Image (cartoon, rainbow, N blue to C red; front, top):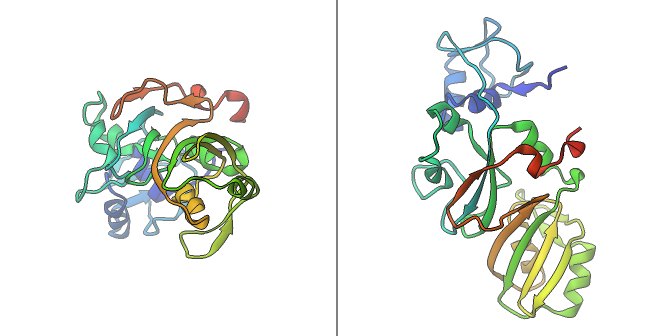
Length: 244
């Protein structure tokens, strides 16, 4: 049985639209049908094998694509026309317009954070990578403003209280820490809360001055240069034994 998908997700992954706002607007203008019926709700869930049309043209999904990028600092992961974004770095890919439009980041990095970013159009795969229950570790190289205190290691390993996107508090899951020197650490987390690592150290009265993601699951940044893209097989990120 096929997993249901929202109409907005389906259309975005087809590459018909670059921005979600344009997609939602078209749905609400009654330009989209599912199995011959007009659907005005962007969050309408349906079987992805159903016949979908946009302006009476059949909408088809794209082949599954998987890339990794060494994200430079100063680039946002949002699709925007107002500031530099990582999608500008995809312009030289030998893909159709629809395929390029269908791509999105798996686990965004904030504007000033560098390092490993997975880019795909496979929503099911993205969900698996992001779910903390999957146990997939994300590794970061962290530089701090102040020396880390001995007692902070214990707090981090047990979980830290931080604020989430709704300004509510939550406790992070325990992390793995390797000390390089008094201000430099390697941290591994299985979660992906927004600005999580920066917030954890803010809660400890410290500040992250440089942050770089170096690995996700079995996939490492390796020798990939800043701003460079590489196509990768799905199994290199998550072995098939963990995908079932």
